[in-house]
Amino acid sequence: MEPQLVKSAERTVRILETLAASHETLTLSELQQHTGFPRSSLHALMRTLVELNWVETDSARSSFGIGPHALLTGTAYLDKDPALPLAQETLEDLRAETGQTAHFARRDEAHVLYLATRESREAHHVIPRVGRRLPAHVTALGQVLLAQLTDDEVAALLPDPLAPITEHTFTDPAKLIGELDQVRTRGWAYEREQGTPGVACVAVAVDYRIPATDAISVSMPAGLAPTAVEKITDAVIKHTRKLAATLRREGIR
Image (tube, rainbow, N blue to C red; front, side, top):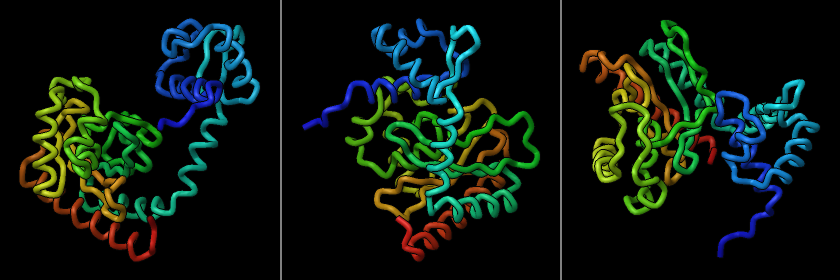
């Protein structure tokens, strides 16, 4: 039986998620279009969220954005994660060895949530990834974690068709399932310009949980030579296996 959701609590969470996902502030009308909630209840909820600093508004109260207390909650999630400090050390080691940007992420249903990043020192105009979610099917991180599931579980989890991010994104679930089968065979995922033009990425699951929920990746220029990609892949495998062994030894689950 599906759990009974408390309507006001569900609406509050949906409002916060909608504001967090938007790159711009939203008016009450735009929020109503996104959520489908009645204007009267939406207005009351927004007033409460503004008073509690979960939502910010301009002086005319005509548009709304995520507030500072949302950051406090997100930071608390990172602070309590016992795997994160060890993962951050792994990212430092990977960046030092490869010279490229390294990420640590966790699957969140059909998305991946970025928990830590170490940017390449050569990176310019970088968009911060920590705290951001991307569709799992467009990233190597997401694909290596989807490969932990059965084909039926993946099909039930993802939309059909899959939303494209670039012209190289998998939009056919059957083609994605075929790619996941290859990921399971070789033990790592590789995507090229599926999520970001000009960028390729290799990822390995951190197998301290069954099925794995976390993964490590390295992003690189899409035009990198195959020999360089192979060296980076070997480095990601080596450091991720070392991290998983450490987490298991420390009893972190």
